[in-house]
Length: 53
Image 1 (cartoon, rainbow, N blue to C red):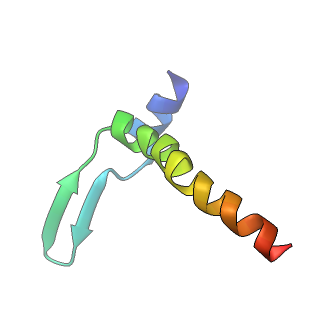
Image 2: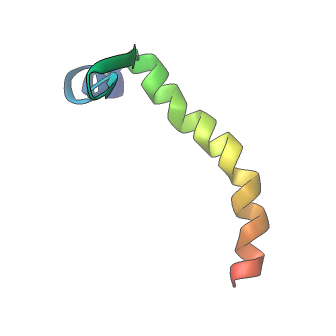
């Protein structure tokens, strides 16, 4: 609950280009982006880690 209040109050949820608004996000979508990013990037990072060490 407190993290959604933080996203609601402190995060700019509008994505704009100069002169045009692209879209708005709700705080719940903004928080879900972190979980989606973890699921998408974890196989890539697991593959890259042994090669960098």
